[in-house]
Structure formats: C-alpha cells, structure tokens
Length: 292
Image (cartoon, rainbow, N blue to C red; front, side, top):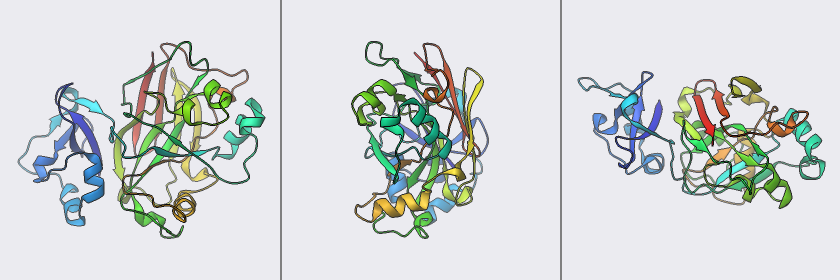
C-alpha cells in the first residue's frame, strides 16, 4: 500500500490519499475512512481498516496527481527524526578522509536527531542559506516509520513494530556539522528534510529490506548501494534504542547514507544554486529537489 499526503489547493487542508496506479490517488473518503492527518492514521488505524485500504474502491473515480499539491507523507513529524550516522562502511571511510576528528571513529552506532518544523516535499526547494552554509551536502536514506510504541523490543521482534518506509534526504550543512562538534544544527535547518514521495507499508517490502538506494545530482549518479549494507541494521537500531526509551508510534528513523556524498569526493563537491538532487529507493520511488 502506498500512502500520500496532498492538498487540493496550495492553502488547503492536508489530506491522505492511497495510490494503486502511478499518477492517481483515492481519497480516504472513498474507503469510508477519515483521519486528521498521517500521524493519526499511523497511530490509530486498526487492522480491519488497513485491509479496507488494500482494495481499490469500485465506482469511485481517482484523483489525478497533476491536479493536486504534493506534500511530504508526514509533513509535521510528532518528534525529531532519529538518525544514524556513518552507518555504511564505505561512507565511514570517505567521511573519515574529509574530517577524521568528526567522522573517523565509530566504536558503536552513532545516533543523533534532526529537528523538522515541516518536512520538505518532492519537488521542493532546498535553501542555500548564503552566509550561514558554505558546504551543502545530500544524503539519501531509507526512512523507517514505527506503527506502535516500542519499549524493550528485541531485534528479532523489531519488524512487528514497523508501519512502513519512505525516502529521506538528510541534507547537511557540513561547516555547521563539523564546526559545532555536534550534528543537530547542521542537519536541522528549515527545508533540510525532504521526505517522500509516499509511505510504502511494511507488508509490501520483504524484511529486512534489501533495496537499491541511489542519489544523483544533475543526472550524475553519486550514491549507489543497497539498504542491506547497513552496519547497524534496522532490528538492532530499534532494539538498542528501545532498551532505555520508548519509541512512540509515528517515530521516524533515518537509517544512514551510503558512500558518494559531496564531502567524500576528491576534491569535495558541494551543492550549488540550481542543482537537482534525485534520491531513489527501489519500490518506494524517487524524491527530487532543487537547490535554491
């Protein structure tokens, strides 16, 4: 199942749609359902309601996506996005070359969070913040969305807590990330969390996900890996974090980025005005943004 958030007008209300065919959506009303937003759906939907959404409604015309305003699937996350740093081996090596003090050591999983006042959308603009940011970078990541509260969950049971998956571009201001000796500020500027284009529910993707993950800039392939190459895998992430804190339903986890980011190139090649960044994950789709 593919779940989208959209608006009928730019200043309209966020609505939830279900996609069966590319370019078309059915509103929740076509299934006789209503939720305030995607967070409410994730946190309160019943198994019986999920079954309703898996069957294309009859006698109802779908909406054309060309006539709708795209939104991030979760425009307003309930909490900061939880993130994994340096979670692909080749990225660990390239990051260490760029700044050994900031990225060279990884004795255990690196966790940080990313403030998201509003998630950026497929087709949205990534701000340059001239005068503040001088080294803007991209990071394609598999986003994992939890469907129920997780506390002291085992790695073996972690899959039962996953609602679905999406694409996240963990846009990063490298000068702020390294200069402040922590990653929160450089990862959390407005517009720095493109997400989408949809949520694909967990039942559509074999666990653990082994999906092709790529990112290109202006059509040039930069990142090319598979999500099964994570150093700390999804089960381990959920298990470790949940041992001492409750991961609430709706929690978004960005699982880390593979090699090929701008800071890893020799010499480094950061984003500039007009660049088009396309993140792609097999089965989920593509997430494209323009640097402005």
